[in-house]
Image 1 (spheres, helix red, strand yellow):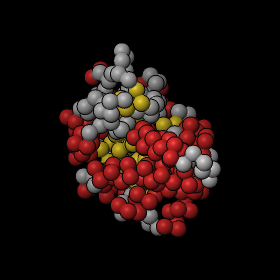
Image 2: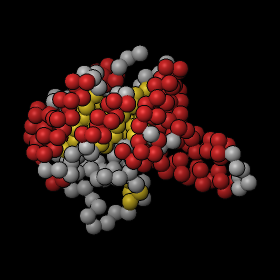
Image 3: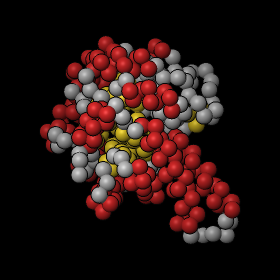
Image 4: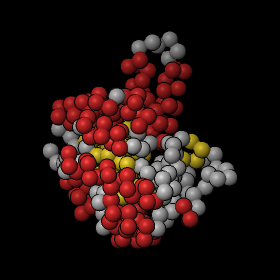
Length: 285
């Protein structure tokens, strides 16, 4: 079985990307795993701090490892958007394959300092564990939004190649997540602001490490493909999965009002989520 680092290197070499898909329940994890089997690709299953609290940190790691071993598929577990050293440590000790320290709400100096602290400790414990850092404004929540004052991404909130270069050099992160017009969640219209592809290319050239694109729900397939061709090696999707799951679950309950067996009314929601995961994988490879 290849490692996550090898999977990322393979993606970079082929100018492709690995899909990162969040889950909150075991059926969501199965949706991701089955999509990976059908598409015959590596995938990353991610858990934010809130999702980890719901699923269980060690429980999620045990579930993923059992699926990976039983089905012999390259599926990896990521501690998405983590805001403290203690929670980075918690995920690493549980057996996660990668962690993201999110210090974008801090001043740059503090973001660099805390990210570097996380990188140093993680690499001392598990050199193979991927550590990602983040710089620039991309919002904080995977939700549906209505466009309004203060809810737009503006160029001044994007990451500059100069800041990105300094950040990566001083933190030694394996992956870097910039702000390039992307934003967490998606507008209720289903379409987000366009990505700044030339900026993606300049940042990739300046940092020398693969990039991660967060908040890709709502961006067009063409934009995402262009970002991948210009240096993005991991692409995050969450909101579209949640929307598909919820809509299908609501319909399932409406059509089967007397059904009380959760595995029966949850199955269509899981299948709807799997369909979206497969569609997104198709964009990346």
